[in-house]
Amino acid sequence: MRISRFAAILSGMFIAVSIQTFAAVDVEITIDAGKPVRELDKNYIGSGAEHYDYYFGSAIKNKNSVQAIKDMNLKWLRFPNGTSAQFYLWDKPMQSYSPHKNKFALSSSDILTACKQMGLEPVFQINTYQFRGKSGSSFEDSKVLLAPGNISQAADYAARWVRLLKGRVSWWEIGNEDWIYWTGQQYAVIANKFAKYIKKANPKAKTIIQGFVGRYDGKFNSADADTWMPDLLNNADPDLFDAISLHLYLSGQIPGRKNETFEQQTASMLAAVDFSKDLEKVCREVKQTNPKWQLWVTEFNAFQKDEEGPGGIMLMQNISHGLVVCDWIGKMLEMGVDRMSFHALTGHPCFQFIDVGKWTTPDDPHYTVPGLAIMAFSKYFSGELLKTQVKNNVPQLKADFQRRMHKVKSADIVSHSYDPVSAYAAMDAARGKLTVILINRNLENKLSVCLKLNGLDGKISDNIMMKTLGEGLDITANNITKYDTVQWHERVVTAKELKHLILSPATINVINIPLNK
Image (cartoon, rainbow, N blue to C red):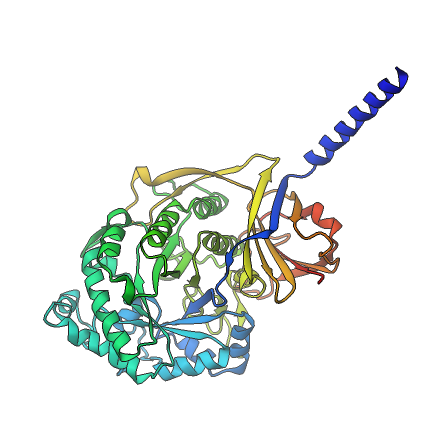
């Protein structure tokens, strides 16, 4: 009887100790190494350069800037990159529109030389707006050029660029945000014609048709992805295209709420990234309709309005910006996006990855915080994407965000709960490593994390490198005036420590785990 009572007491003590140990860990993350989700595209992450970006033009002529860009380990470069592509005349670059007083234009050969220097795959955009028109041509002129009787001439202009480059560019994206001007059906007709001419000029060329996420109401057209995408997919020739591209932008500002703190705005952006229902729907539609097409996001970024900022945009470039960008990459990979391009590499002070001239010189380039944050993926995350499961022992976080970016309606304001820690994992068997990225989305509190790695018994080495970005800093910290304010810090951890990691608030944490053979 005494033995039974003693055993019961011991059992109770054991349960109590187990509960206390369990409760001491805020978040449990389980990774199953034996069940990969998919193989990641080796060139999944890139950026872009506008034809009038004289900062990039200076960078590619300077060995320090070239090396700094190479060290980011980006894989591809989009050119002329965005709206500027709709004004680019490939056969007379200097006559292309530029917002700068001092005329400057990058040529195809400039970009191909730069890509070779920096190990980047070139991805070129076709002009579907002006073609051979004057720099000041209007959309009315464009409609004439794209009319049924004239579109062959416009498509041939693009095809001659393809022939000129003789296979040195494999990927060609047709237009830029043409949903501003056309219905899904109209753009599909345009894209079909261009793709036929491009593939006739180079049968090995790969073409990218544009898709659309969200809603837009503008001067020339109103578009909603719920109707625009089906119209596109029903009229595009699936055999003419190899990928579809999407553009994603978000803001933490909510119309009508003027007194929200920057912390609240950051939480809104993180909630929007975690939600991503609109992107998820489009990805699902594409895969169901044209499963052979790759999914690309050729532009993504976070931005906020600020009347006093450059071009009316808030100059963030801080830890908040880095957290959002890094989390977004992981989310896109989870949703099946094959490639993505951050807008942009250099040039615009609110968006650039690396500063080579705005606050410094090409001889002394400096990474912005988003530029540092993206390297969590570009430098370390490769191989097979693994599924992660998050179990919270603390409450989820919650924030409101605007689901649409254009002409927001009250129904577009969404309240969303999300995990305090986001987790992404990839195993690269060829390199003998497992990489785990943990982002503490709690902006105020440290969190303890237990990392459970299934299927790796006896394979985990103790020489584990953990790198952290943002530790001990406010989310507004940046590298704009003091270039080394935000840096990666690293330390060695053991396999045992993975069971109880402490993540500082608002940090990105990269854990590189070497695997024993």
